Amino acid sequence: MILMLPAGVAQTMGADRSPAAGVLAAAGYSEFEDYWRSPRDFVEPMNVRRNGWSAVSVVSVPDTQGHEHRFFLKRQENQLRYSWRHPTGALTYQYEVEAFQQADSFHLPTAELISYGFRKNGATRRGIVVTREIALPALSDFQDAAVDWTALLPALRNAGQQLLRLHLSDWQHGALYPSHIFIDPSNGRIRLIDFERARRACACTAAEADLSQFLKRAHWIPDVALAAFLEAYRLRMPGLLYRLGERFTHRNLLLQEPSPIKRNSERENNE
Image (cartoon, rainbow, N blue to C red; front, side, top):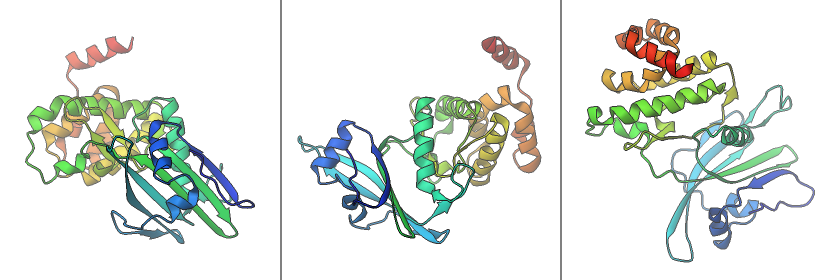
């Protein structure tokens, strides 16, 4: 699907050529304005900051067999971020798309990017990003639920291993909140969303920044579950967890050393 924009307007556009893009096109979503003018039934309050705004809505369309497909449509206007790559500023959604594309080349767990488009008309910059709905619970969904954490421990260990792989690839997510981590309780496979603040950083820097954000918002996760989630980090980056333990003093588990058996096993696996 190509998002056609008016002639004479500075633009960047692209899309996945998957069947999902065809489903959206058949439902009338084939141009930038089709998305931009769709009903503003936002799933949460509009984010107003950086002299602009952004918001998320759901697009639900049927395929030819009548099966319903749900997508998240993110719209943004004049919310810019500046960097050495974009010294004059770029929409934060543009950074997110770049992160999606690079993360995909590393086979990292992100949402499925379906379509995106950016346009600049005078002083106004607008962008859209369309992703497929993730049919998994976010980790934050467990906060107020009756959870058998013991049964979830294997999945949480696997989830932590995938997150560590993200950091060892020198990626910092930038907004690693429980609500941005979707997890399959049966096997621990994860999907991450909201890559607007993602950036390349050395593994330890990326992991420390992301896990600090996570721990600030994961006060409700019991120690036994958090220990499983961070087990891979304890084996690979024990110094990092110790530093975090000095900051999050109520989490004594962060100051624990990995057992010699597990540490030796990890060393053998890395050789």
